[in-house]
Structure formats: C-alpha cells, structure tokens
Length: 307
Image 1 (cartoon, rainbow, N blue to C red):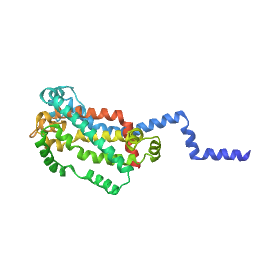
Image 2 (cartoon, one colour; image 1 turned 45 degrees about the horizontal axis):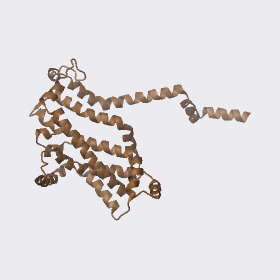
Image 3 (cartoon, rainbow, N blue to C red; image 1 turned 120 degrees about the vertical axis):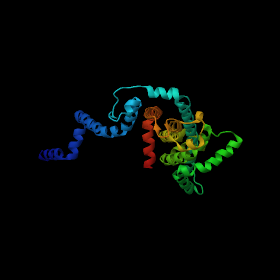
Image 4 (cartoon, rainbow, N blue to C red; image 1 turned 180 degrees about the vertical axis):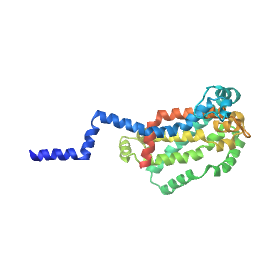
C-alpha cells in the first residue's frame, strides 16, 4: 500500500507526467492552440505587410500618394482609378496577363514533363556516370541567368530563320525550360529517392513495364513532390524578367514584368498608383494557386529536403 502511494507521489512530481496529463485536458489544449496562434501573429504580419502596402497604395489617388503629409499605412479615400487606368490605358489585362499565363503554363508543363523522366532515371537507373550527370544538373541550376541569355539569343536567331518566333512568347517558352528543368530535376530527385523500390518491384511482378510502373505507381505516390515542382516552376516563370526584357520588344507580346516596367515607368516619372495596382493584380493568381495546393507544397518540399 505504501509502495503504491509512493509511486503515485513520484508520478505526481514528475514534470513529464504532469505535462502529459495537462495535454490531455481540453482546456489546456485550447489554451496551447491560442498561444501558438498568438505567437504566429508577428510573423504573419511581417510577411503580409508588403502586400498590404501594395493594396493600400493601389487604391489611393495620385494626389494622396504625392502628399508627404499623409500616412502611407492607410488610405483616407479609396478609388479604383488606378485599376481603370490599367484596363483602359495599358494592355495589362488584354495582352500582358494572357501572355504571362500562356508562357508560365507552357514552360511549366515542358519543364516538369522532362524533369520527371530525368529525375526518375537518376534516382532509379544505374548506369555509368549517373552521379556525375546528377552533379552536372545541379551545377547547371546554379549558373546565373545573365550568363545564359547571350548564347540563347543565337539559338533564338537560328530558330527564327526557320520559324518566326522573335518578339513572340514562343521565344520565352523555348528558353524558360533552360533554367526550370534543372531545378525541377534537382527537386524531384530527392523526392523519388524517398519512394521504396519494393513498390515498383511489385508492379513488375504484376506485369507492368518500367514506364507503366512509373505512371501507375510512382507518379501517384510522388504527387506532392510533383505539385511542389509545378508551383515552383510556375512561380519562376511568372516572375521572370531578364529573358522577357531581352527577347520581347513588341507591345502585344510583353509579359507582366516587362510591360509594367516599360509602360508605367517613363524616365524619372513613376506611376505609383498604377504600378501598385499592377503588382497586386499580378500577385492574385499566385496567391490563389498556392492557397489551393499549400499542403502538397509543404509535403513535397519537406520530404525532398529530408532525403
């Protein structure tokens, strides 16, 4: 009797036991959840602050933006004139946005399709030089873009002699995979290595070929990593500026980054209201895309990183 009482007293004084007991109570769980959310508020506010400033500035009038006596943190009078200016005075919604969507979607599809096959081959196939090839892919990803666009100009000029693609978004669709594909391969390579080889061997026993096992077994299991690669590739294509500036001069073929830079900044005159409106409108598709696939994005990124 005394021994059992002693054990109970020891358990009551054990911090680990007390912590476990408290965690089982609903009140403590709710309190802990509240504390966690309160701790996240400063980080969320810090992350969303630039987007908030962009939105506030986009709904201000030019007079309020130019008035240094007004606070920049909220608008005293809201207006949609900046968005109307984008729609009526520029080709933002008519050309720039559509071109950016076409280029981003096409480049992402091409890069991810090639990246899946290459990453799977590097992760599963054993051939001479596979490690060297994997390192070469990673080194290619590290090469700065300013060093690549000069030889790519010669490539575009050579193709343009056969098929006219200069000053069209096809020149971007062809050149974007040069920096997207190495990144996709590097990202998916680590994820494919986390998938057990035994599941593919079971597919082989059921009569699947290697491509059949890839399509029916590996790709469904690797879907979080693939979606992560798609999101990254789409975002890089959407925000790319240098290639668009070099390869595109025609007004109707410009993307958002180049169109905003060339049309809303004229010399030392900055159309701040319209610039912020264009930035906010160009951010919405990316925000919506990430909000739908955030769970897959985090899962695919962490799994590949852990491997």
